[in-house]
Length: 497
Image (cartoon, rainbow, N blue to C red; front, side, top):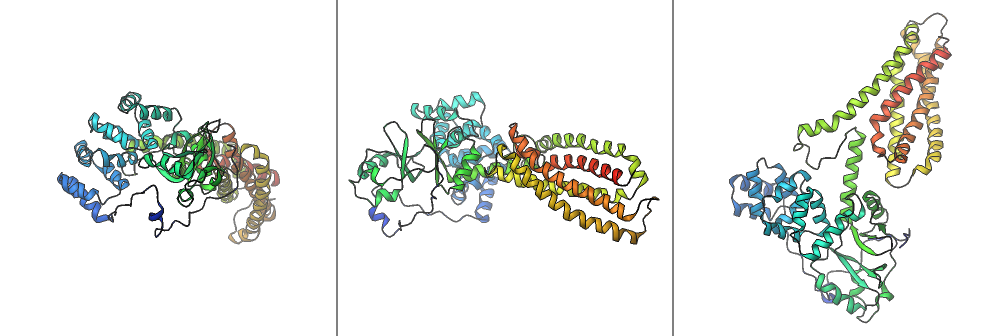
């Protein structure tokens, strides 16, 4: 279905607990009491692991969230401890922990289980989590595990694995409520009931036509509070937003966030419903993408580590940091070359060296601000490479305005404040002329740097590079070089050097 832009899916109302159990034909199970977790429970878990006390470990694990159990597993130092953890916890409970483990630890954790236990773990996983886990394994191990599944689950898993892991299809879940336009409310409830335990979300129930194309959606309360003979086509609502399975995961997550969607339908080119991106998946995707952009903006290369900072090996940190540092160091040599070319300008008016760092820093700061704003707008799908000219015009005007104000302020400092320190000034060069040269260079540097900082992300995007790659480090290095050329060129021209 073509996406629309109207409507926002807010929180559901009218399903208070005082009446819902009386009107619930699906007989939804009541939620069990979940013990409060805290540092004490985690400390008890650590002591049980250290003592290899299975009963104490299981008792403590009941009070610890599976994400914290995964963190505890990551902190273990030996294979012996990890084997005890996995084998004592058991396949059913370990299936909750497994998707939370860093990629590097997944295959090793599975090695502690027997084939029958591996089958149970895989069957307990939701289809999207199962695919995520399998994508972390090498091809041989992946095929071995897929072969443990029953025919239906194997076919579904192989289908999902065809999609790249960074696409909507690679992150979607297929465990959703589906009904037909030809059904009544009663027929829909009877259709949904057998799959209740396996359905990940009934927050939205999707209505399909005879060709499996998505034509509408329902809320569970629509089925609960309407008479059993009501046709679904009379109460279903249109689906405002869908994404193709090949859509980038970040674009899909941003779409779900923008339109306040609890679940975002994923369809194929024919409009057939394949699955959904749930709200928790969208949050996880945005967290991953945000971390990736922050790391790239800091000049970190390679695949981002899923392990905590302290558990990431030193060599991994080294490998991710060295390349950018080396490249930027080579680029910085250009700054030294510029100074060599303009050595006579500095020798003649050495006072120019006092203002050089300020001019360079102003360019780096304004260029960094511009690149940050543009990258943010691109991440929110507010900009595309086609908007380059509009962005250039907007940032050029902003850069000129910023440069004008800054140049006037610094020019006044050079003309009226500097004489008080009695610096040595060559014959024939006055403080007003010197101040004009510094002010003009600063103004041009700020305007140029703002334009460069805004255009570099768009340029990177147009050639299929991640805009975050050219963020702070790259922008700073580029405007450092251009700033020195601007500064010395303008100073030489206006001071007659």
